[in-house]
Image (cartoon, rainbow, N blue to C red; front, side, top):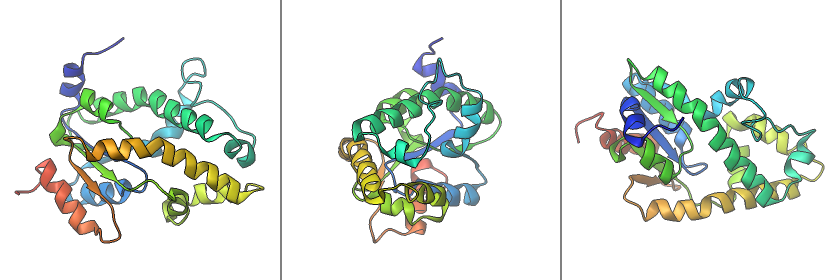
Length: 216
C-alpha cells in the first residue's frame, strides 16, 4: 500500500526530525533538545534490533543478513558495504514511520534519524526538519572515540586487520555522504555544520528557533 505525501505529512505533523551526516551531532543535540522541551525522543538506531526481530528476510533481506564475524563484515568492498547500509535504512523506514504515526498521535516527538532530502520532502515540512552535517572524512575515528559507540569500536578493533577495516569503513562512509553533504549545503533546507568551534548550547538554540520551540 502506498500513501500519498500529504497523508503522511498530516499523520506526522507532531514529529520533528533531526537528520544529516555521520558525526554531525544528531544524538547529542536530539537528547538535549528533548530534555529541554519534554519531547518524546525516538532514536532510529536504538530501534533497529526491535524492528529486525519483527522483520521478514523475504521482504527485508538486508536487515536479516548475518555475518560470521567482524572480518566478514568489514571484508566487503566499499560499494558492497554502502549498498547494504542504504538497503538497511530503506527497509527499516517502513517500521519507523508506523512507530512515529502511533507515538505522535497525542504528543510531540523528536526523531533522530537518517533521511535523505528526497525522503524529507515526502514526509515532512521544511520547518520541521534540521540537517546536522560534518565534512565526511576520517569518520571511523570519530565513531570509535564516542562512548555511545563503544560497541562499534570493539567490533572493528576485533578484526584481524584493523587498519584495513577502518579504511574500508572510511571509504564507505565518505562515498555514502560526500555527495549528500554537498547537496544539503546547496539546498533550501536548514542545516548546521559541525566544526571544532561548535557548542551544544549554540546548536540547540539554533534548532530551537528553527522549530519554533522558542521565540526568535
